[in-house]
Length: 100
Image 1 (cartoon, helix red, strand yellow):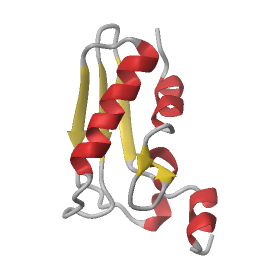
Image 2 (image 1 turned 45 degrees about the vertical axis):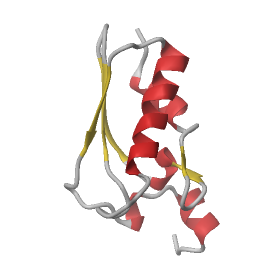
Image 3 (image 1 turned 135 degrees about the horizontal axis):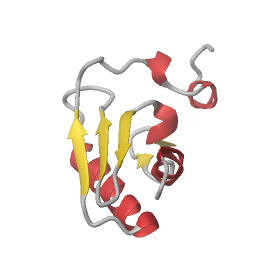
């Protein structure tokens, strides 16, 4: 069976179009649950009015399906806890000029 780590590696292919960094390093992925016939991902966006949420969601579903063969990919957009720059990887913060 596919691991959470495998799914995270695949999700690194999904780029946040506004900032040009993958959604894992931006800190948008909150939870991954891998079952035999389904992958469920809880994720957030950098702010509630983000106009690219549908694109990011579609890209997540596509990459999981293509990389791992899952037909049933469930994505849950959540707002708690609210995203903050502290969720970003050190590399992403450095790329964007934020302090570590």
